[in-house]
Length: 472
Image 1: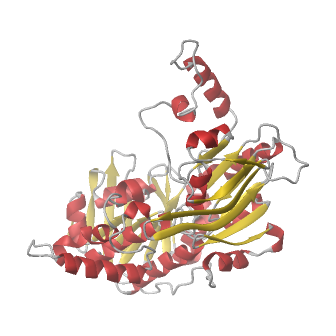
Image 2 (image 1 turned 180 degrees about the vertical axis):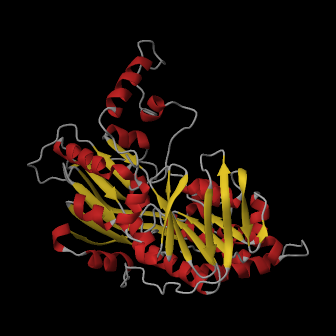
Image 3 (image 1 turned 120 degrees about the vertical axis):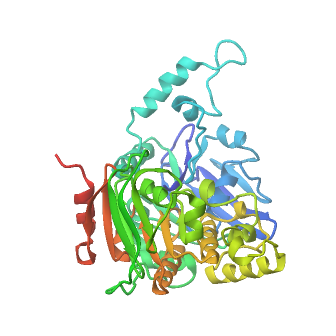
């Protein structure tokens, strides 16, 4: 999911050249990292302004400054030409600024209506109370506007943005999907290393030019690799696997030296298969054979046997956010690195430093808290901890979600290197083009079952959709 910032003018005027919101010389620094360095940025009434950059370029930091979650160390803010202060989320809300972040930000124990109006609940007649009836009525009206709720509803999202533009709403839109940039954008701003690199209109640039602006180097977006014409022996064999999470009678196999795709529509059961193989969700029946031997459905056993799960939600399931980068990199390899049970900080530091260099993790040091890293660098840390553990099978669940094009190429090159060295990979992705360009073959899921298998010469987006869609 992309990140979008919505700015609603109190009285939109499409004819004025004055920016609706303008930032001048904004800087923000964290310990060891300059997140924003003298960034100037403007958005005009009723436009979709695409904000691009690699992970760690400063996009999220800029959004958090705009919405008042971060206080800028330097810089000025102007709303409709008038200088304003944005030092808190309350300041931003008064100006009509709202952010829809890439990461889901819902409160699970509140209902849908309460989540929609969290922080801006309508007041009741009695001071200190909330107008519950109005919340329910307004929430119903919002939900009846056909909001996009999954990757299958891209057209609805585009239609919604078109309606918002017509109403004079300005949108700052962050996306790593080039198709969205050119389909939606009126203007483009590129950030790199916390600085504004360039701006352009979509009609004046090509995708390759934008990539070069973002990464400062040429990036191959086709993810070329030498496909496994003769893969090795079977490493993973799943027989009639069924679990209470909704998957049934799953039969798949993965061989050494190959990348096998697991695809299908959102909700088809892809992640549930991955979690059942790793033991995160218990299987109710079926058999999992790994490296020639049956394996019980427990994560600790799976990890010790050499199975790695890089989960879809890296923050909640893949990282210890309050610990350091170094701690996260070695946590899965503690038994391997310290078989005696005695922890050696210097050895741990050396292992972490090697992985940081190898994976090009952008961090001031291994001691940096991993929560402060960008999404792409956090993903590299999750992969790195399993590299340290010496895993044989890597299960990637949406490995490039929220990752920029430069990091995508690096991640796919890493996966290719792993399987080239004798490991195997099972890759889940909602991006069908990734499955087609990266995988040696693929299984397609539908309604909790394997709907079909596609060999390398059958692996097309059309065939994936055909197998993944409901049959009448």
